[in-house]
Structure formats: structure tokens, C-alpha cells
Image 1 (tube, one colour):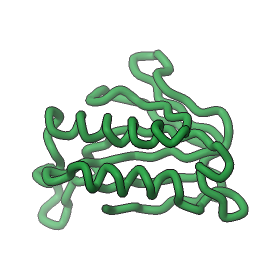
Image 2 (image 1 turned 180 degrees about the vertical axis):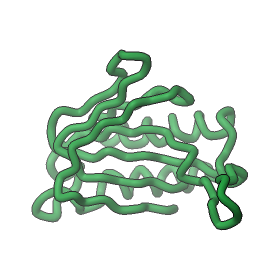
Image 3 (image 1 turned 120 degrees about the vertical axis):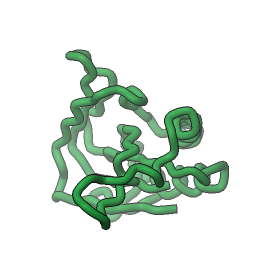
Image 4 (image 1 turned 30 degrees about the horizontal axis):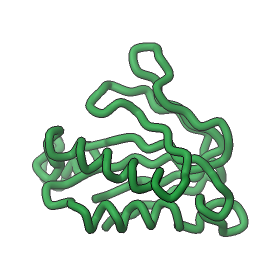
Length: 141
């Protein structure tokens, strides 16, 4: 499992002109990709990392300050461009495999009391964010 995690002051996801998820206060925007062998261990580790990662202001975590998270599925994080000019998507889990894993990460983050907004799995999404810093890290588990 791979995530691009940005510290933001606001972020939103729009699908077909409708806002489907947004945070309007400082928190995290998480773009999450799932690969074929991700399961319960990766879900638990990613959820822990996302909630305990000390990248908010003053080296605080989402759990420390009660900050929200906008979680967006993004299979393109597993695009491989090492050969040629066209990305290979073979490392990305297909939708029927990835969607339940994504949903489990959302549920695990919510289970510890964090407010989680999401995009719409598999949809063409317009993602907007106001990066704070900017501060962005890659998390792989």
C-alpha cells in the first residue's frame, strides 16, 4: 500500500460538479494506492501511520489535534514508468480487490475517532488542496 500524504489547510473532491468530500480546516489529504497483496496487516499499519504521523504544525499528529483527513483512492500511484513512455498499471490492484481494502483503511482511521471524508472510488475526480508548507511525504507499508 502506498500513500502520498499532504499537510493541508483545506482540500476537496468534486465529482460531476458535486462536492463529495472536503475538509475545511488543517488536516491531511491522503492519496491512497492499493496493490495486489495488501490485506489486514497493511490496512492496520497504514491507518496507524496516517493517524500518528507527526507532520502537522508543531510536530503534532491527526490524533493529537483532532484534525480531519480526506482520503482519496488513486490507483495511479502504482503506475510504473521505468520502461517506455506509457505507464504500466500491473502493480495496481483491480477495483474489486482495491475498493474493499480502501474502505477498510477508511474504517480503521474512523475507528480511532478521526473525521474522515472521501472521494468516490473509481470516479473521475477533481481534487483541490491548499498545501500547508508545502509538506508532503510518501508512506509505504
